[in-house]
Amino acid sequence: MLNPVFYISHGAPNTVLYESKTKNNLKKLESCLKDAKYIIVVSSHWVSRGLEMIDPSVHKLMYDFYGFERELYEYKYDIKSDPFFSNRVFEALDDLDISIDRNRKSFDHGVWTALAMITPRIEIPVIQLSLPFTYDAAQLLNLGEKLKPLRDEALIICSGSLTHNLRDMDSSNKVKEYVSKFNENMVELLKKGDLETLADYENIPYFSQNHPTSEHFMPIFIALGASNDKVGESINREFIYSTVSMESFIFKN
Image 1 (cartoon, helix red, strand yellow):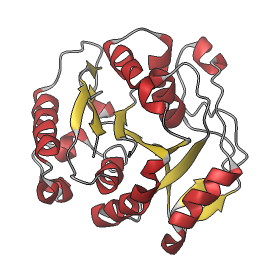
Image 2 (cartoon, helix red, strand yellow; image 1 turned 180 degrees about the vertical axis):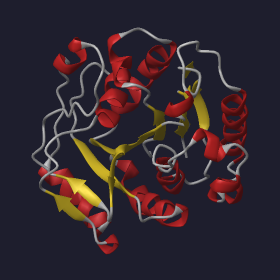
Image 3 (cartoon, helix red, strand yellow; image 1 turned 180 degrees about the horizontal axis):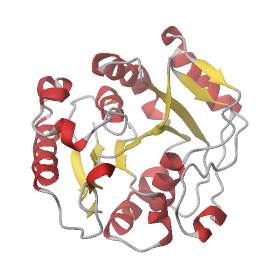
Image 4 (cartoon, rainbow, N blue to C red; image 1 turned 120 degrees about the horizontal axis):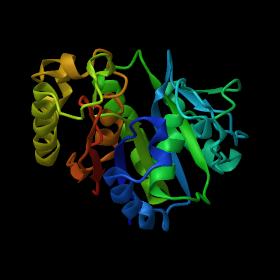
């Protein structure tokens, strides 16, 4: 039985401190961890030139943000990688010239925020891969394809944000029209498994308004690549700060 693949919109790091609709919905995914031996995570907050893997000995959190509540910088979440399972992933991706970044000594908030919303305690190892900015959609799909054979033992989480225009956000929480229209379109495209339209993402209406930079969107192609039927089902809907969608998806097959 294959473990599912997720695309999680992780939102601001302080989502871990407060109750929310997103947190309540993502908690329902905890049961998906029971059959996994380890988790593979790709976060939009580790962008690299080539494909890299986190140091297998890592067990610390990175507080890669500023201007948030003091208690967020004191937040603790037990998480660790693992040399044995890191090697399994490394071997699966060997022909992509993957390397281990020995300087990457902590997990960024795109990893631990997503995981902490799913489960208060993670007992299996977490293997983080970088998001190569040199990869186009086809190459990210291929990366997902390479990870697909590992789904019988690993849970794959691609962490980003379905919309991510921080320049235009405000505290009103009134959702901008270009955000809601893009969000609805993406839900339908993923529901249909319309890979052709998705791969031409820059021409999807309102894409550039929702993604002034594309790193929070691109992990979705890894999730699609690791999926057999390319169909994503929405598991959460919430908007924060008027421009940030927390829409998240499960790829079951």
